[in-house]
Structures are given as structure tokens and as C-alpha cells.
Amino acid sequence: MVRQSGSNVSLAQRAWAIRRNALLMGEVQGQGYIGQALGAADLLAVTHFHAMTYRPEEPEWEGRDRFYLSIGHYAIALYAAMIEAGILPEDEIATYGMDDSRMPMSGMASYTPGMEITGGSLGHGLGIAVGAAMGLKRKGNPAFVYNMLSDGELGEGSTWEAVMSAVQWKLDNLIAVVDFNNQQADGPTREALARTPEAAKWEAFGWHAQEVDGNDLDALVAAFDTARRHEGARPRVIICNTKMCKGIPFLEEREITHFIRVEPDEWQKALAILDEEKPQ
Image (cartoon, rainbow, N blue to C red; front, side):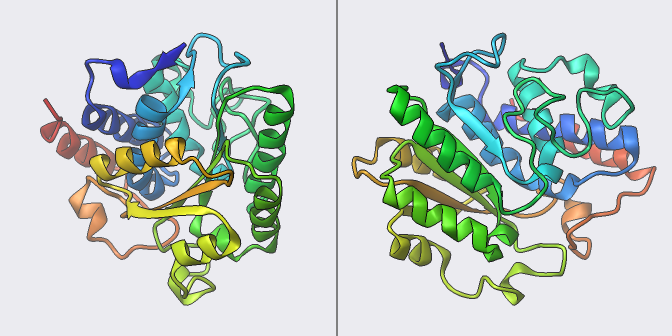
């Protein structure tokens, strides 16, 4: 049984490695949702190297905590975390998005060890997680189900049906993790359907809700610890406010859109900046 927080490698080093793995994969194809991957690296470091229990060498171990990536186009970010965790081998980075690769550009459970669900049809992930959490409870399995979803999915009716179902069934083994980077395909999320305070909305539906800086490792650790230890018989959500392209200043300063374009010569420039800032 593995709880990665016991490692001598710091969470800052894990987040740095996740960013670097994502950039290397993006360079292979010359594209990818790298802005989201860089922004979500800190919360993925905390889920995979502090909060979750799993066995890297046995991705289907029954006692594992489940991580359900609802946002299929964030696969580059999850692959980067799973490579750092040892679930996927580092030498497969060069195959990202290629024919017959185990790491397609959108996450698919049938292709990739450790990829629990096929995401991409946005708004479905939380419903799948609710079903999984119910099943684990009925089997007496104490594992947690983590569902990472996007702020854009908070405008999907199916998401809120799942929110209500989780409360109805008292799913205290379910932790939703919202990557709130204020970007979706049609523009800023706050200009779409997310104009109200998110934590208060989830609380009103009956969830235990926290909102944190999703790029602050200490705040994330505290939030995940609180979520796991909360004693109420209700599901939990952590809303993580993240910054697109976090860690690469020249990309952070670019006009932010849902899909960040990186020029061919900029991948190595970004990697050089990251390497200069490697945590000790």
C-alpha cells in the first residue's frame, strides 16, 4: 500500500516534474492542453503524492483510491503525474499522441493503465464517480473516489444531478476536485454560468465545500486532509483556483484562452526556464 507523502521527494519537486513531463509530451506533438497541465500540476502532485493510496505496479488493485478524470483533454496532465508516480514508464513520453500509443491526446481507460475512465464528454465524470462511490460502499471497501472536473462542467445539468445524488446517498467517500482556471471553450468561465460563489453553491446542495489557491501546495495539503477527515456523512468538494500556464512566465503573460498555442522554438525555452527553477 502506497501513500506517497512518506517519500523524501518534496511535493514541490513532484509538481516540478509533472510540469516538465507535460512540456516534454507537448513538444512531441507541438501542441496539447499545456496551459491546463501547468496550472493543475500542484493539485495533481498533492492528490498523487500526498492524499491517495495506490500501488503503482498494480493499477487495478482493489484497495486503491480511484482518480476519475472527467476532463478528458487534461490527459496530458494526468499522464505526467502517472509517469512521475511510476504507473507509466518515462520512456513512453516520446509516444504521446502517436498511433498505437498508450497515451492518446484525450484520456481513454481502454488504452492507459491507471486511467480509470474515458473522459471528454464533459459533465459525465461526476456521475460516474457517484456510481463508483456507491459501489465501493456496498462492497464495504473504504477507498476514496476522487473526481477531477473543470469549472466549465459546472454549467452542465448532469453535473448537478450527480451533486444531488451524492448527497442523497451520503457518499462521504467521494471528493470532487474542481480545477477553476476561469477558462472554457467559449471564453472566461465567470462570464458564462459561474457568476455565483462556488463554495456556497455546493454547500447549499449539501456538500462539505472548501475553496483554495490551487497553486499553493500547503493550502492544498490542508484542504485534502480536511476533506478526508471530515466526519459528516456527506460528499466533499475542493474548488482549486489555478493559474493557466503556472511556472512559465512568458506563457502566463500571454493572452489566456482555453487552448494555449506554443511555437516550435518555445518548448525548449519553457523547459530551460523550468530547469532553472528546479526545487532543491
